[in-house]
Amino acid sequence: MDVLSRAVMCFCLIAWMTLGWSNAAQYTSINMKSNIDKLKVHYKISKDQLFNGNPVFPKDTFEDSEQRVLMSVVLDVYLSIFSQMLNQTEDQEVRERLDQVKGKVQETQKHYFLGRIPELRTHLQNLWAIKTSDTTVQGKALSEFITIYEKASKLALKFHLKKDNRRKRRQAQRLKSHIM
Image (cartoon, one colour):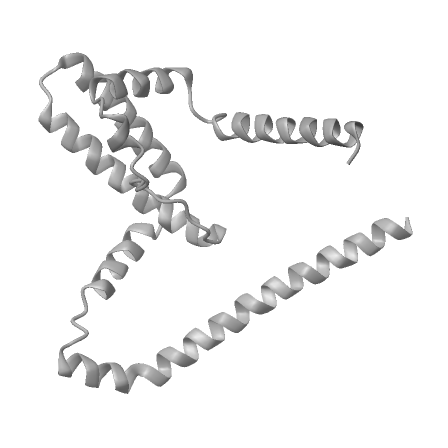
């Protein structure tokens, strides 16, 4: 690889990283960042604890529709964390900052992540609570299996067709742009 190619690749990489980082923070206000920075100082943990390889919220690779449900639950967890922090502190400045951050999370959740999400979350919790070792549950599950499997197969096919149609539309658009 010649020097010019390396320079162009390096420039592209730096531009991509810069744009990626700037886009990631475009929704967080300066006030919110300031509150979080001051709260991090107050709730300081060691670097070993912070960078132990186990993030509280691991990165995921879910589709957009799944992301919405997941983000609603993540925001709920944050609301619970902030509530616990509020209950555990006497410092008035820290309480005010936590209230402001918690209010912004509630506002974001209210405007973008409500709808049937709480109902779905309750349904998921009920599913996770099913006692799979119970023989009565096992028998009932077997009797419901064909119906559930048919529904899952139909949904999977619908998703596959949607994905296939998107691919065909993209190909048609590319073909159309090459012709013009």
